Image 1 (tube, rainbow, N blue to C red):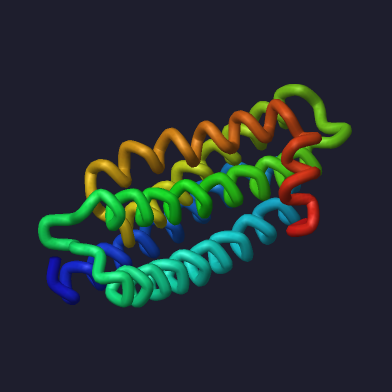
Image 2: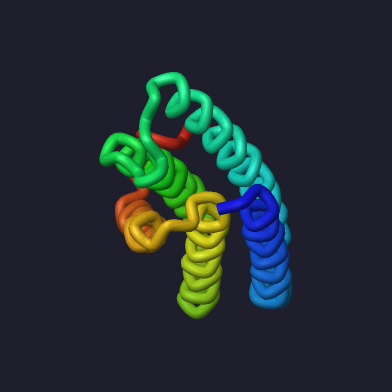
Length: 168
């Protein structure tokens, strides 16, 4: 993939994340969850920074270790998959903690709406990762990691607090 194509993918990934934030605002502002919207906005900025930094570090590490990228070696693919999964599991845990804190004492319909917003945010995190790691194998593993991590940590908040409580 050329550098121009890669920049175009990142550009569209950012545009998609901004559109998702607009949809989240439409979902969350009527139920007065401004704090959650602000925290998710900040979290997306951090996710993009961590994602670009991780991709840059992996590029240099893979070059240093002479991992083949054309055709891609198993080590190259697996190391990129590990970056995708780690970023999305951390995102899932953090966003589940944010959603959990935002739904404390809320009526059930608001809790369902806020959790739906969390699933949408998990999908947006998946699309951010896929803007950098564009291969179909990365997309396949990342979708399950993003939505699965959010669902797991939303259902099991004690694990999310134990692993990612220091982030909040």
